[in-house]
Image (cartoon, rainbow, N blue to C red; front, side, top):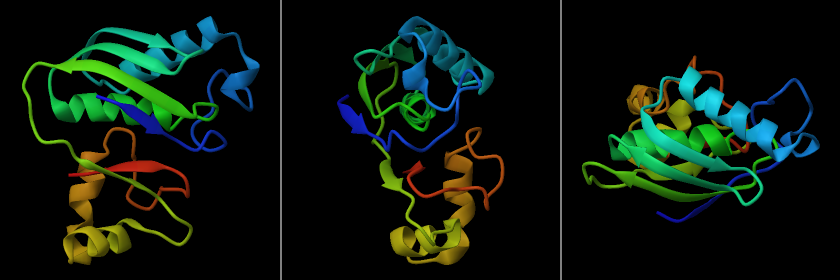
Length: 145
C-alpha cells in the first residue's frame, strides 16, 4: 500500500475527451470503475476517488491489486494513485517500470531478467491492459514480476 505516481499527460483517454481533468470527478470515477470492470480485474467494493487519487476496497491477489492500480494510473489525467486496497492472500510485490522512449518488451526483459526472450513474462503480467507486445508507449507503467 502506498502512493504511486504516473505521468498525467499520457495514457488511455476516458469519456471521449482529451483529459480526465476536464470532466466532473464523479463522471471520471464512474468511467475508471467501468474500465476496471471491462478489463475483468477482480476487485470487490472498489472505492475510487478521482479528486484525491485514492482507491480502496479488496482484491483477490497481489497481482490483481497491482493491475487495478496500473489500470487507473495509466489513464490520461491521473497523476497519482493512493492505494488502500486490501489483499486476501499476501504475496511479494512486483516491481513497476516506466516505459522510456525507444523501449520494447525485449529490451525491458533484458534489463530486468538478463534475457530478452523473457519478454512474454512481462506481456502476460500486464494483460489485459496490454493487447499486443508491441503496443507500449513512453510514460506507461508496467508490472515486472
